[in-house]
Image 1 (spheres, rainbow, N blue to C red):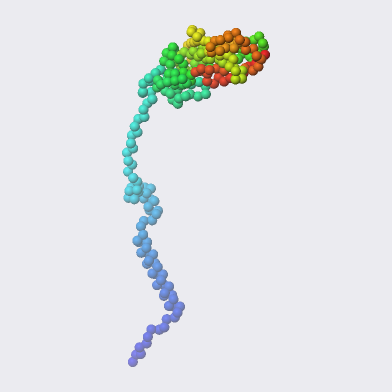
Image 2 (cartoon, helix red, strand yellow):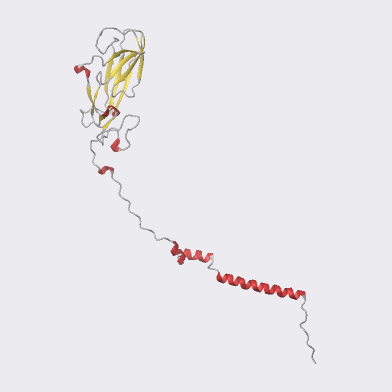
Length: 255
């Protein structure tokens, strides 16, 4: 009669080996499942993007929208000029920024410069102060008792258009003072034909004017014409009028 015997007992070493093999197999299966479920590798995606065959690359590139044709900017030369060209302003900068806004262009036809003088269109028109450069000098800085001071004016038009400047005793008034005492003015008693002296100035051609002071005092009411102003001391000559800007003062001494 055969005896029934149970399974032989398994050693601990065999038990743990079996456990390790089972766990390794399980991890292998999980790795295969994870690999099968994952998408294409990054390398495949990059390859598809390079050769342009991938659908993702096509959808990611937006269809370029047609560029709008820029509207043409207005051509400055297309607009008709309202008045003839002039010239740039005097040394120190141009009043305007463009070809049609320079000091002598007068493109707008509006008054410009000091005194509201419009841009000249013909030689008889007055020059704009911004287009005229005036310099003033005295022939000496120290005068003997019998010498008469002379004030020299140089007037130059910088505009292209020939225009007119009054270099007379009122248009370009020379004043001489000793301290606060106004001793002499060319505008005093200037009447009639002697009150104005209009000169037409072409561009860059200076006009010269000399005022000689006879060392006598003058008054606006023309009284006491023969009163001498021969007091020794320091005197100052200044220029007044529409075109006097930038001339400054000239100092001299009478002995």
